[in-house]
Image (cartoon, rainbow, N blue to C red; front, side, top):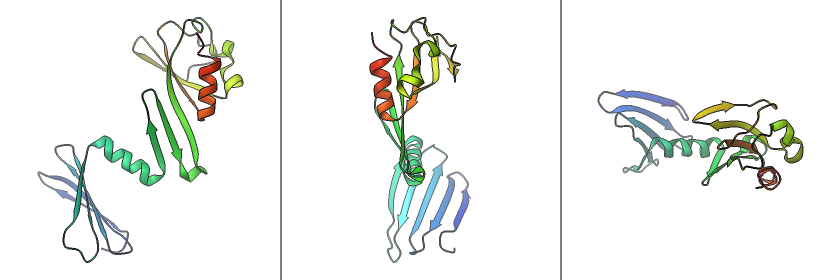
Length: 164
């Protein structure tokens, strides 16, 4: 296999194996098993024993995000994503439960983007998602709003819009 070439192999009863050889001659193998786990093996050139890691699908996606530069950091209601390919762009996506002070008001009434720079990208109402709600969208009691922006815009949104 030439350097950086990708080889895939279907392993009956086991899953699928993907293998990459680096320019240095190291081998990286990823197995997607029939049981749903992902196994990653690395074998340094000249070594006989590989190093193995077993991951869940979520852990494997997180590793993939790190390797591609889309780094995701999550806390309870917020996710921050860094895109190194876009001049280290970092955006935050945060969930807010709409307070009574916002009930009955529209996105336009609140002037969310003008005041904070943040954008409402979805609202969950009665277990139904409304993606990209229009400016005329009026909030109701119990709504959860998904907001995107830079972290300072999210903080401003929380302080200026989500006040009780």
